[in-house]
Image (cartoon, rainbow, N blue to C red; front, side, top):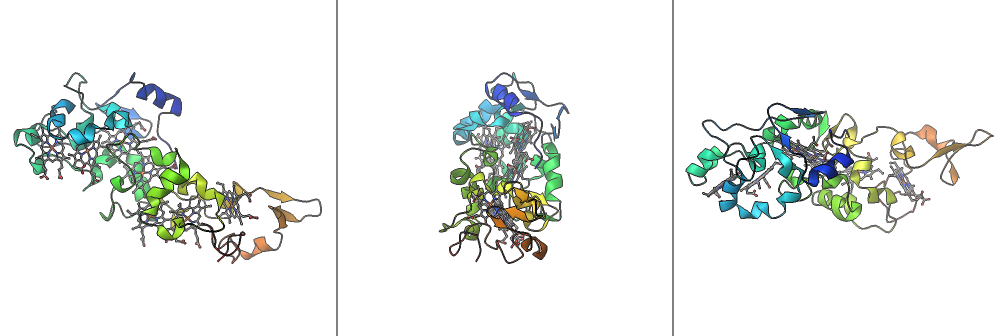
Length: 259
Ligand code: HEC
Ligand code: HEC
Ligand code: HEC
Ligand code: HEC
Ligand code: HEC
Ligand code: HEC
Ligand code: HEC
């Protein structure tokens, strides 16, 4: 999966509080800055939101979006909340009128306005049903947490697979013979947003497995993967559909990962 703009180094700098993303149609290699609009409303700044929505501020300072501002940062507290929710003056004036504030949990289009690449991923033939309105971004990303980008790193098994596990119990249950690849997280094999390949696989053929399991050819021409010769096995199809490693997510029966 493609990563946007800022390398990790830059991110650290950002989180150090130095830089700010300011709007006015600036583009950060893939992320465009285009906040949602609310007819007749003006930006008021985060401090106004804080009066009524203190909960969302608890861990938000650590989120990359807390550095995203769509107006002059001199507006009280900056405009990071409104970068996703749209200008809040009418919502504030009406004491919280829902029709005057954007909720990207109900409609992801405000995320797509900035993350156009992600929009494209969700339009690939295989995708999580987000554009269909059956799922939303917040089921995998925590918009107000310290770690909206966390699924990409951190404590792999403990943190990121857990998120997928809410819905995919079969692939995440405890097994006797674990596949250590799972510790790297689901995204080593799956594109979580969308893919051109079946089952959201990021690679459609054996190369999916060969990126971690080296394929070695002996002088006599035999092909080894791991400790055993795969010379004839490889003609049968992919590592997982050929009847060999059918239990790619882990097995209760055999360490070679089969059902
Ligand atoms: C005067 C208090 C007040 C202020 C200030 C305020 N809100 Fe609200 N907000 C509310 C109330 C009340 C609700 C509705 C809660 C409900 O109906 O369940 C609400 C709901 C929301 C919702 C959910 C809307 C939905 O469709 O579910 C969002 C998002 C939101 N506010 C964002 C903001 C943002 C961003 C700011 C700052 C620009 C802000 N609010 C400022 C009172 C306020
Ligand atoms: C990255 C975009 C983004 C930013 C920035 C953001 N929000 Fe949200 N907000 C969302 C999403 C997405 C939801 C829907 C969450 C869900 O459906 O679980 C939401 C929901 C809400 C709600 C409705 C209650 C809830 O939690 O579902 C309120 C209130 C709210 N946000 C306030 C704020 C405030 C205040 C800030 C600034 C501190 C802020 N938001 C910053 C994306 C964002
Ligand atoms: C006003 C523009 C804007 C909106 C709206 C917006 N984002 Fe972002 N988002 C950014 C910027 C800027 C960054 C940091 C720079 C980058 O990664 O391009 C970012 C970063 C992210 C990252 C981390 C990317 C990484 O590589 O680590 C995630 C995940 C993300 N946004 C998800 C969302 C979701 C989900 C929504 C909607 C709820 C949303 N964003 C709405 C501008 C926006
Ligand atoms: C099924 C879970 C899931 C859903 C739903 C989801 N994401 Fe993601 N997203 C991820 C994971 C996992 C990563 C980390 C990918 C990686 O490590 O390759 C990610 C990464 C990202 C990134 C970082 C850069 C990139 O392109 O990989 C952005 C930005 C982002 N998501 C935005 C969004 C937006 C916007 C939505 C809703 C429209 C959304 N995501 C919905 C799981 C999800
Ligand atoms: C909120 C529930 C939910 C979460 C969280 C979730 N998914 Fe899904 N997933 C779904 C739904 C719904 C489908 C579509 C099923 C369908 O179309 O039949 C799906 C489909 C898939 C598929 C394709 C299955 C197939 O048979 O084609 C894969 C692979 C997948 N998800 C992986 C992941 C990964 C990896 C994560 C974590 C980054 C994740 N999912 C998080 C609900 C979820
Ligand atoms: C080592 C690579 C790899 C990893 C890591 C991985 N998967 Fe898969 N996954 C696959 C392959 C290959 C298939 C296709 C299996 C098939 O077609 O028989 C698949 C299929 C799926 C399916 C479709 C249903 C099924 O079992 O065929 C879901 C859902 C799924 N994976 C979810 C996940 C989740 C959630 C995680 C992380 C907890 C994950 N996967 C980690 C390789 C992987
Ligand atoms: C992210 C790296 C990674 C990927 C991708 C990956 N694996 Fe693994 N796999 C491992 C590690 C690490 C082990 C444990 C050490 C070892 O046996 O090499 C392992 C072990 C195995 C084992 C058990 C070997 C034994 O003798 O006990 C099999 C079988 C296996 N993997 C098959 C696959 C298949 C099939 C795929 C592709 C669908 C795949 N792996 C993709 C990392 C990976």
